[in-house]
Amino acid sequence: MGIAVEAEDLRRTYRSRTGWARARRTEVDAVRGISFSIERGELFGLLGPNGAGKTTTIKMLNTLLIPTSGRARVCGYDVVADTREVRRRIGYVFGGDRGLYDRLSGLDNLRYFAELYGVPPREQKRRIGELLDLVRLTGRERERVEGYSRGMRQRLHIARGLLHRPEVLFLDEPSIGVDPVAARELRGAVADLAAAGTTVLLTTHYMAEADELCDRIAVIADGAIQALGTPAELRARAAGRVGTREPTLEDAYVAIVQPS
Amino acid sequence: MIAVGALLHAKHLSRSPLEIAISLVVPVVQATLAVYLLRSGGAGDRLLDAAVGAGMMGVWSSVLFGSGAAIQNQRWQGTLEMIMLAPRRPALVLVPITLATALTGTYAILATLLWGRLLYGIRLDFAHPVAFAVVAPACILSLGLFGLLLAATFVLLRNANALANTLEYPVWLVSGMLVPITVLPGWTGPLAAALPTTWAARALREATGGGPVWPSAALCVGIGLTCAVLGAFALTYVERRARASATLALA
Image (cartoon, rainbow over all chains, first blue to last red; front, side):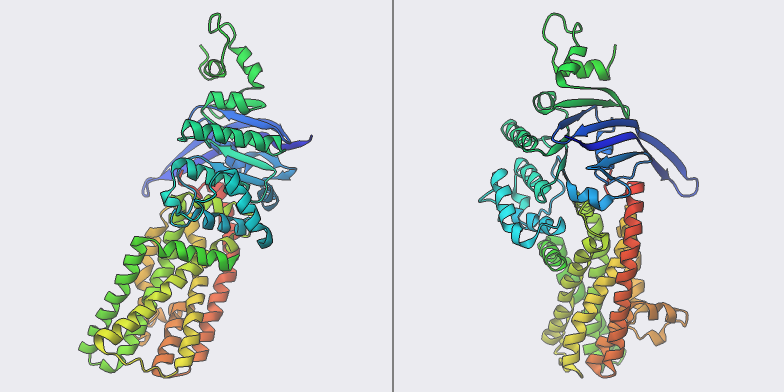
């Protein structure tokens, strides 16, 4: 199998300065030394409350942020030293309305990102067509993105993230604000990608989604990994805390991030 | 990639109601002011210069705010991270945006010429019409390359538009787009000589009123290319700093 993503004692401190005459410096330790590895083809979940350090971790792994200390490799390439090699091999999709050119059509957005991400011109048309089919936007691709629903935008995000056939896909809360039917389809698409050999790192607040999709899950809180294991292993940690019923992943999550 | 990127960014810019309104109104207002200023100053024979100069001011504003606000806009849209994540040199990612702003700025020259012709009856009597047709796009593209150097600075700043606001009027004043630089204090000379806007304005003025067009145009293109090289190096450094200081995104 081999390792696709490897993080060793990753740390990230945000430093900010406010005021001019009497400048006040503040430091926030967003990620405090986390280590984990993801096998090729694995679907790995990163769960945690808001501000836990999930997005910061993803952004260090996908080269958007330079770690304050520690090391990370993606497909064997160092995220700081071999930035371009890492970028060739990864896709990044985040949830929400932003990240697209609203006044361009879905097709123009995909054409632009295909150029940027180095998809050969001869392949672009076919690849874009395949992805439009995959995310069910065929027939709507010539409409401006500003007229798309949130679910359609999210699907376009996914198509954009897959244009260059990434080996590793980072999905940062991709189902946020998406209706249940679209979220279900999204889960199906993510599962298909993992089944086809794409390594996926997923962050989500939806426990059922993580339970259904992930091979392994790390629960992160206060910038550190609090628990790591398969969904079944994590659920077992909550046994005895919920009476006689079978514990859910949500029970396990609450037990981990809010230990009594 | 640069051509497709520039065209798609120009398409995106040209669909913004705010951009369209600003592009429609500002150059024409500036041209009108320039015409009245020159008429009242007894320089009625230089009205074509005024129209071209006001057009150049429009191109400069478009490039300046294009490079400054476009980066900020990309931040707001959440696309800055997405484009910087591409496996390309940062300069290659940003040059289509700065070229697109220069392309949309071309409208300013066309609009001010048309405005001058229709409203004030200014005769479009170019001394070197062929040179004007060649030099105008070359100067506009050179200003687009200057925009790349500006963009390198703007990536680092979360409030890049504040810097853009302070640069607009001083640069068009120092570059002699409307007022001859000979009437400005001597210390502005070296500053003006280093700006591609100065040589672009001079080349277009010479193509309009007569004079040696090509040396000024060559200097404008030369400075533009130098800016592109400096901008490419600066962007590589700046992109790394932005990733270290977490300024690529809004939060």
